[in-house]
Length: 268
Image 1 (spheres, rainbow, N blue to C red):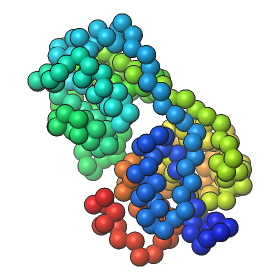
Image 2: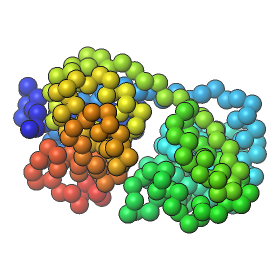
Image 3: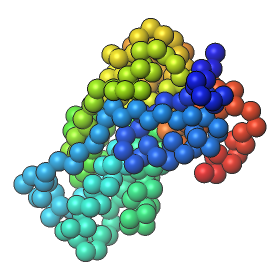
């Protein structure tokens, strides 16, 4: 049953995407007529430059491929490279786990960035299906990511013959839900919860009481859906990707919001 807020007939939707990246998603969901509550449970912090990182930037033109795992990693990459290279070196191939990450690189440098095939989800597993990443004999690959996280990309590329250098440019800091956020996770008084990060999902599961675990959860991949079920979430829905449009369309379906033009959402 769709939970309505006390002061309106609009369904309350909780979003967990951190920082500025959460704003386009909030706008897309609000455009449906939903009441948006942003849960500030994670922040991203740029790490101080190390001698290893500086050596990578000075050697940046020697990499054959650069693989970027998140939009914030892409932003950190652009900022760092532009401090050392007035012009982007030619000949480097760029890869990204999702369209939002690729957009950061395209906006900054105008580069073509390969992403997972459109029929697949925006995941590391999907990116690894690309033909250009199958045989990598002695190719130098820079993997740009955050501190911690999954090792699948780096390990698989190395197994395929690449010389992989993984560079962590930022850390993710989990925060305790407070105020309305904490209350929502205890009472379950919301219509849907949107999560597109495994780390955030595991963090929230520790704060969700039984009522919240039974409320609709919208995730961006089947991998997250499997994790959610293991954590005790009962009513899980998989969106067709992690973009604001895909997640908003899932909200419209879950919350039974009538009159939504899905084509218009996809154009956005």
